[in-house]
Length: 297
Image (tube, rainbow, N blue to C red):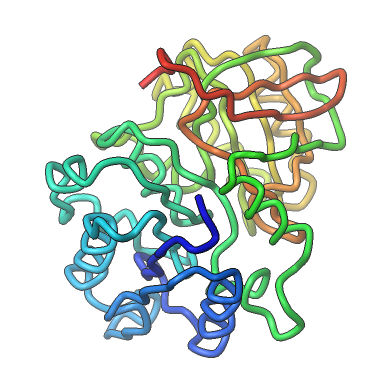
């Protein structure tokens, strides 16, 4: 993606802080990008955790994606609410728009998952302009910012973790995101499946027993059937998550790397979901994307 590209910023989830988002937009403009901010990006409504009405948030997302001038759509922030849009989006119109890039994380996992199922396009799990890592007063967090730009230019560096739970090496399409969101999609048409894939998981503010509950739900829903490897991101404010992560994931018998600086916390590195990647426990790293023609859909 070129620095003089036209990009859109929309708020499919929670309401963004106007000052933070303004700084985030200015930083993208500072690269030479033309930034279109969705008309409802700063809306509020009766449910204070949502950035405006569902129909308005869905319309902003769809208009941005279907605008032929726009090459990337940044989600302003996470929070909660993206899953409420999945039944309101005209997926046929979205498919007709051709490939472009969706960027976001946390609650945006619902969109990453739906875009993978409905559109078959890779999406970027990365930082958001309405978040302090990009829109903070002191400037963008440098490692986060550089990693995002590298990923958008197709030159993402390997992401290195700090521990190995199960040794080995695996390749597959990277799938996943926020554990709570993935669990919440079980039983829907966008239910996650890690079959033939590397599962990426992270979360924030969940007690270990809740992490256990959500992993157990995904296991019992069959999401991990055929999984090739597991990459674990940040577990901010989750107590010590490693005993439960080991207990639930080691029995799958596939390589597991952990402590990747992806998800919440700082720095927040960017990874492509829906693209072929590899984990290697010798270097405790996740590398990708390897674009190839017959990439799994």
